[in-house]
Image 1: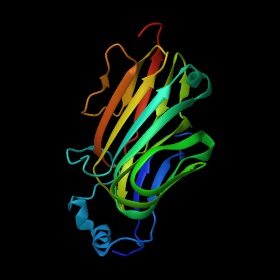
Image 2: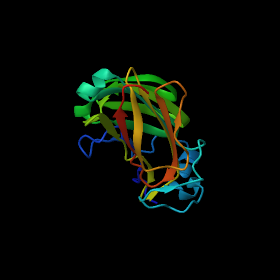
Image 3: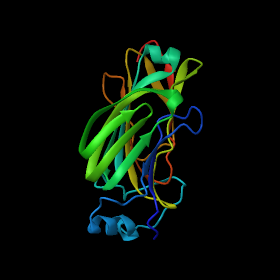
Image 4: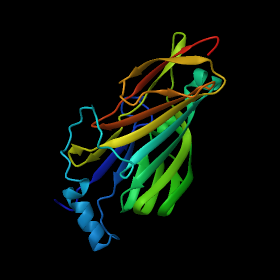
Length: 233
């Protein structure tokens, strides 16, 4: 394997326009890694010798939180229905040891980007539409907060198009877990469509407007949610 190989973990926050996604790109430079970490990074066997999946979505029982996984939380309020803007927080867990990671968001549809917390990372900085992480250690994590123009109004409701989510190494796609929640703040609405339907069932907290989704997959995940506005929940 050549040393200029890159590891990509693509995380979408919005699809307005189609190519408005957040991409985590591991820098090509291996400077700063120990010999053992360089060997780990350049050796495909460190991906557990799993068969490389294609971009086609398949549900997986191999995904584990011992490897990279993502947690998203969305908050929708009455103003969101008018403007399309909503609050988000996003945590990336079990990052790999690399000198630099850049998390880049679509500039037109992101604002107020800040870093909530980080661990086992020497430096983390939010710069307009990008979060830069320096000297990331094995198992590091970072949580980011901001606002994104994600919501699309519909007749008597609204929709959210997410993704594509993926854990990509070179030309292959590996098992990944995404946990996503949608909180409706002072909005009476119910979920009427979810695509794709995953084996890990939707969970809605009793007497609340908080929905939880849990995905374990390989390939590319592009979840779609559609809500119907109601007088009462």
